[in-house]
Image (tube, rainbow, N blue to C red; front, side, top):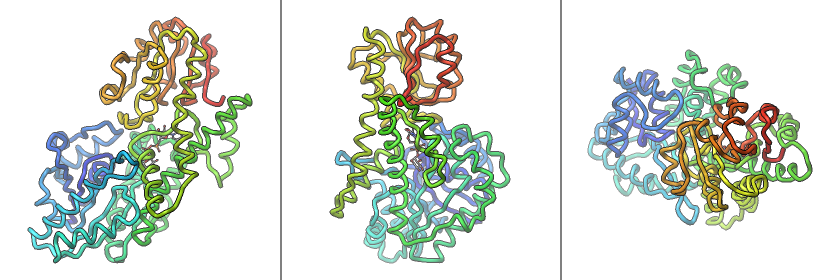
Length: 463
Ligand code: UDX
């Protein structure tokens, strides 16, 4: 039986570990945090991610998923190790690689302890280009007897659709200078591809809609056509470049949305027309409060920092960051303009996007705090992220238990995250609860006709 160790139990590590353990691979899922491992041992995830618990549970029950805080057994038993730990951003925007190096050191040491002479070390964490080369040297310094077959295997899964994306591989990027290792890694993901053919994906695809219409094609396409084997440095650059381009697309849509606002156009219809061109594509052209989360902000700042280290300027990315920073103020100004007496406003949504409880760099939190600064009384509700949000919200923001209690007696409501429950809300009922009539749709996700039909004033971003 094939055995692998996956270090780090975040969105990437745990989703990969749980799904691989539902094939015939035995997976050691390693984290230094005992609390997290204890929860995984109970057969569930310690964070909210649609569909993930089911795979964790099956993996743990079958014995194929082994949650542990001990590197020793995990590394001794495995000939492939995946590094899936975080690379948070530092104050200067560059990536903090301390966890990456801790994992590399631990793996090299444990290989020495178990007399292992060779290991395939797969880097799934997002690291700056050139990191692989440095890590191999570093691991050699720790354990000179060890042959490290380094593979860069960037991960593209989205939070909220992590299970869906892990199963529905759109591309598999393998950066390696050793064809045997590349083949082994490819073989592991072939099993995921085969598993995906047998499953009904509807249960965990609620927020995977950007891919929905492609699902059939994705799974029908030949696995080999999805695999891109390249050198390590190229693979390292793929991930950050992909994220930077997506962030750029959103910021571009937001720039045009500002023009659309002034000109009286409708940005959603504009982008429907623009995105119908297959060279452009409709996805990631949805205007609104902008991008946040654990990836885009740090990957973009990390790319800019790496480029600068190489003496290269990336003004196009500087502009994308600036545009993104402005969107919260742009939406807040709408609330201010429509509610000149200020008063009380409900912020619906706190997570950085729907389908997740993650509030890292969430524009929704910045919006709630900004409205406090503007002098509003702010109440807020999120279906999943209230606990996480509390730490980052101004103390005076009052959290409510549901949409109805959030809307009770407010002058205005602003949609900050495009959760489906907000889209499907009964705005006739909302009108009865609110004392004012202003609805600012910061994600352009509501049916404006329905909102207006309820006697409310609807305003979106660029429409
Ligand atoms: C992203 C990448 O999509 C994924 O491939 C990578 O592996 C990790 O980073 P994620 O951070 O989970 O995934 O979120 P994503 O769905 O990409 O959304 C990022 C942000 O952009 C969210 O705040 C979202 O609300 C915003 N967004 C997205 C828009 O404002 N408009 C859009 O059109 C799309």
